[in-house]
Structure formats: C-alpha cells, structure tokens
Amino acid sequence: MRAMLARGWKRANKSLKLDELWKDEEGLGTLELVLIAAVLIIMAILFKDWILEFLGNLMDSVEGKSESIFE
Image 1 (tube, rainbow, N blue to C red):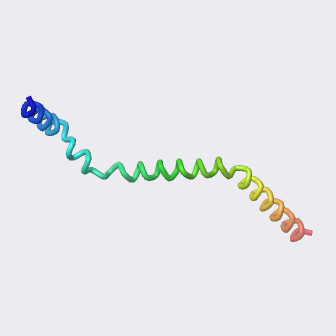
Image 2 (image 1 turned 30 degrees about the vertical axis):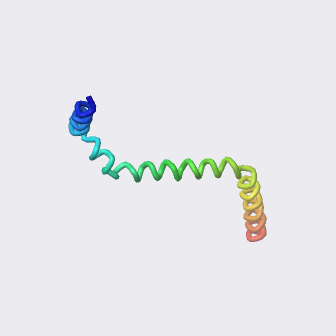
Image 3 (image 1 turned 45 degrees about the horizontal axis):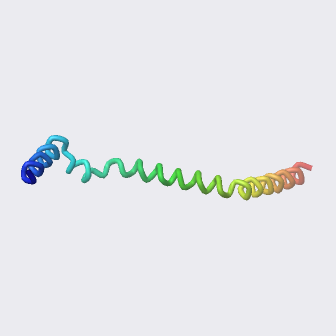
C-alpha cells in the first residue's frame, strides 16, 4: 500500500511539476513588494496623528517663510 502511494505521489509530482514550482523564484519579487507595501501602510496607520501634525507644522513653516520672502 505504501509503495503504491509513493508511486502515485511521484507520478502526480511529475505531471504537475511541483518540484519546479518550489525551485522557481520568479514570483518572489512581487511577494516582497507586497509585504513592504503592507508594512508601510501599517506604519502609516499607526503613526497617522504624528505624521499629520508633522506635515501641518512643516506647511505652516513654509507658508510663513514664503510670506516673508514676497513682502
């Protein structure tokens, strides 16, 4: 019984080319980009208030300096 299962697994493995699927690394770049994007989105959500405050202060600073330049 065990030998019959082993032959069946080998036959299925050959026909589906599962060995090549595990060795193929072509899709890894896409997976890495998706994971990096997910981490960036999570970080943006966690630090949303701080980021908005920082950008608000930055824009106020830029606006103040631009007003002094054009006066």
